[in-house]
Length: 267
Image (cartoon, rainbow, N blue to C red):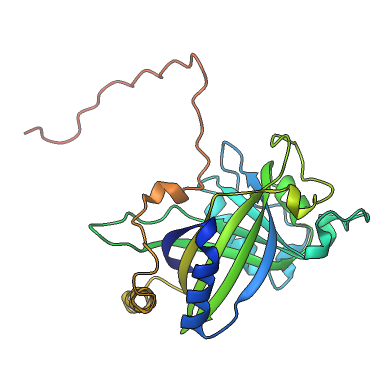
């Protein structure tokens, strides 16, 4: 799957206006949702995603096989996502273990280079939805928990374009915990980011010129329908880079080059 998207930023004090514009353009109220997002870092040396505990025989098996192909070549930071109900914030009830809940595992590749004054970005993406035992699966495949947050979103759709208005809510206290939190604090205890991000998004199943042109046309049409209400930015693709960057060991000496071998005729 390929994802084409445009990006704009909305200050917190302008979000009600932004929601009103999106509601009017899309002729719908929008879906308000919360999502718990956990980030898992792949190993320094790529080792694929091979330990699947029989998942390969389920409807999601072919998607895990695709993920294995990507992660065998390069390690990435993966997202594990769970929907959150508002009553879960600040609940004192014993939460259901995450492995017993159905969540989504999301991988995104480094976007292709942005050329000229082009505003849209496109990249490969894979989302494995409605899957249980995700925490066990990622940990058994040498992925390490790094961080978590809550995302709050308003989602609108029109003409095969998703309009997603999202902000991040950060947990209080130490962010260096070694495992996911046992409970979710009250929403009033979470620290919101100072802005919302608006993504206009189109998904296409494969990278063909026809589908690529269609995706870009849909995005540009959606952008025009919003007039001057949003300032869509050209962003460096490295903003969306989820590849694991391996830091060379300290004091590591470079390996000497082998003997020079001349092949063929020199000119």
